[in-house]
Length: 120
Image 1 (cartoon, rainbow, N blue to C red):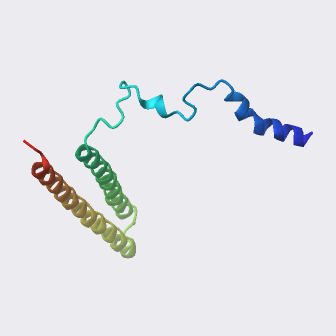
Image 2 (image 1 turned 135 degrees about the vertical axis):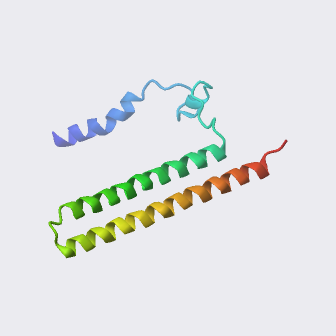
Image 3 (image 1 turned 180 degrees about the horizontal axis):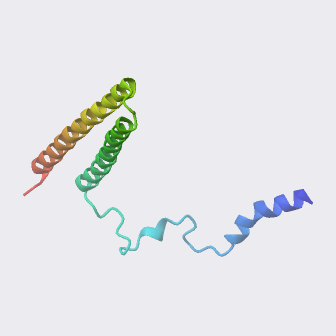
């Protein structure tokens, strides 16, 4: 019984595909212009990806700074925990500065690249 059930489950995708059209592989599924895949320029796409990554990293460093503040507030005066919290906050601030510099550099590079490659 298990062999029959396994055979039927393996045969089910082929049975579901019984009504095929001329386009067996789905190449023409995206030929409709209403979908607008790839309508953005390469510069806009790269800039969007860079902004998303740097935004995520900025949120992460902000959370690290907040976590360091929380550790400091809940240290109950323990000098070891306060020192650990200070190191965490310092690392978060350094990370935030690095991310802001990376954002400025990427913004400059992308704008200059666009200015040098635009025809007209």
